[in-house]
Amino acid sequence: MANSIDSSSPRSSLFALAAMLLACTVAPLLAYNLTPSATLFNQLTAFAGWGLVLVCLGRSQPRWQGGAAVWALLLLLAAPGLSWLTGLPMSLALSGSAMITAALLVLLAGQGLDDQARLDWFEIFCWSLLAAGLLSLWVSLVQVFAPDWADGQIIARSGIPGRAVGNLRQPNHLASLLMWSCVAAVYLAEGGRLKKIGGAITLPALLLGLVLAVVLSASRTGMLAVLILAFWGALDRKLSRASKLSLLATPLMLVLCWWLISFWANAGGHAFGAESRLAEGAGSPSRLAILANAWELLKSNPLTGVGWGQFNLAWSMSPFPQRPIAFFDHTHNLPMQLAVELGLPLSLTVLGLLGWALWAAFSIKAQGQEALMRRCAFMLVLMIGLHSLLEYPLWYAYFLLPTAFAFGIALGRPGPRSRSMAQALPLAGLLMLAGSIYSVTEYLRIVDIYVSSANAQPLEQRIAVGQRTLLFSTQADYAAATSLAPGLAALEAAKRTAHSLIDARLMESWAKSLHATGDDERARHVVQRLREFRNPIGDEFLAGCAQPAEKPFQCEMPTRSFSWREMR
Image 1 (cartoon, rainbow, N blue to C red):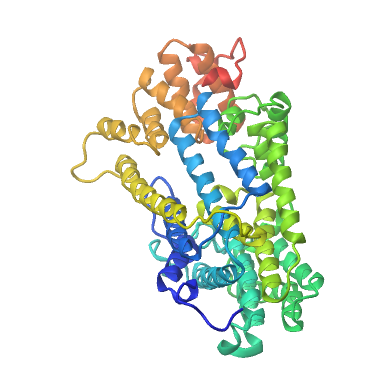
Image 2 (cartoon, rainbow, N blue to C red; image 1 turned 60 degrees about the vertical axis):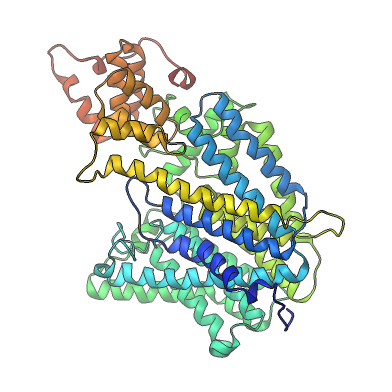
C-alpha cells in the first residue's frame, strides 16, 4: 500500500470513514428496536450507511464494469416485479427490488475502483469489520457472564440462557460477523497495520477473543467457519508465517475456550449454551425437513417456481403432514431458495453466473498487497456463502451489502475505456439515504399499531393508516387480519400478509374470516394446514372437536383440496 495519501483517498477523509463505520459497525451493533421488527433499524442503518459510502466512492472515480456477478443481479432484479404480477404485494416487491438494486450498485462501485482506491477503501472496510467484531465480543461477554447489564437498548438481552446472540439477536448472525472480523484482522496484520498496537501478539490475541465469542454464541455454523480459517492458513502460501500459524491455531483456540467456559459453567452451576446446542447433533432435523418440503414444491413447479417471495405462502398452504412444526418463511439454503422461488432455468442461470464470478475472483493473478486484498475479499464472500447454505443472511442488508462490496473488490478489473460512475454513484447514494429516512417514517406508523401512544387513534384507524404505507402494508395487514372481526376486510388482509409470514394466530383468523364469508371449504383447508403445525394455538382452536355436541366448522374435514395458488 502506498505510504503517501492524497486528499482524495478515503483514508484521509473522516466522512468516508464515518460512512463505512455506519454501514459496517453501527448497523450490526444497533440494539434499539421497536415492535414488530427486531432488526429493521439495523437494516435501514446499513442501507443509509452504504448510501453514504456510495456518495464518497464517487470521488474515487470508479468505472462501469460488467461481468457474471452483475448479470446475475440484473436477472434477480426482474424477479420481484414478475412476482408482483402474479400476486406478491407491492410492498414486498418494492423492498426486494430495493435490496437487489442497492447490492448491484455497491458491487459495481467496488468492482470499478482503480488499484490504489481499492486498497484504500478495503482497508477502512476491514477496520470497520474488525471494530464490529470486537464490540460484538464485548456484547457477547455481557450477555453470558453479566446478563443483568444488558438493558435491551445498548446491549440486547439474550433470550437463550448461556448463549450470546449479539445485538442482532441471532447466534448465527453474530458468528458470521465474528468470522468477517477474523478475516479483516488478518488483512490488517499482513499489511502491518496492527504492529503499533501490540506487535506480533496482536493478531493471535484478536483471533482468540473473536473465537471465544463464537463459542459463546454456540453457533455450529460459526464453529465450522473456524475450521475454514484454519484451512485458509494451511493452503494460502502467500500469507506470512505469523498469520499462517495464527490461523492454524484457531481450532485449538476454540477447544481451549470451550474447556474454560465449560469449567466455569460446571463449577458455578451456570448455563453453557454450546454444550446443549451440540448435544442436538450436527444437523437440524427441522431444517432438513424444510429442505425436503421445498424439494417437493420444486418438483411441482420446476420451470417457473412458486415466485419470488411466495415460498412462505406456497409451503404453508400445501399439504405436508410431516412438516416441521416451526413457521418458516425461507428454506435456509440459498440455492434451494432460488430454485423453489425462481424455477430451475432461472435459478441455475443465476447460480451459475455467481459461481463463475466466484471462480473468476479466485483466479485473478495479482502481486503483493493487492493479492492479499483480493484473497481476503474472497474469504469474506466465502464465509457468508457457507452461512447461506444453512441460513439466509443475504436477505439482510447488513450482510448483503458488505458481501456485494467485498465481491466487487475481489472482481475489480477497471477498464480505461469504460465510463466513470462518479456522477451516478452520489445520486444513487443520496436516494438510498432518503429511502432509509422515508422508511423510518413509514415504519413508525406500523409501530403505532402494535405499541399505541396515550393519544392514539382507534385501532381500526391506525391499521388503515398502516395499510396505506408503501413498504410495510403487509405488517398492518397482519394486525387487521388478527384483530378485526372475521369478515371480508380481515380476509383480504390475511391473504396479503400471508405472503410475508404465516403463523398459527393468522391461520386461525384466516379460517374464521373464510367461514364468516361463507367459504367453509377453504376455511377447512386452512384448518387442516394448521393441524399439521401441531401448535398450541391450533390445539386450543380445535379443542371443542372432541365434544359430542354439535361441532363448529373447524372440526369437519375438507371435502376438496386446494392448491396454494387458489388461496391467494
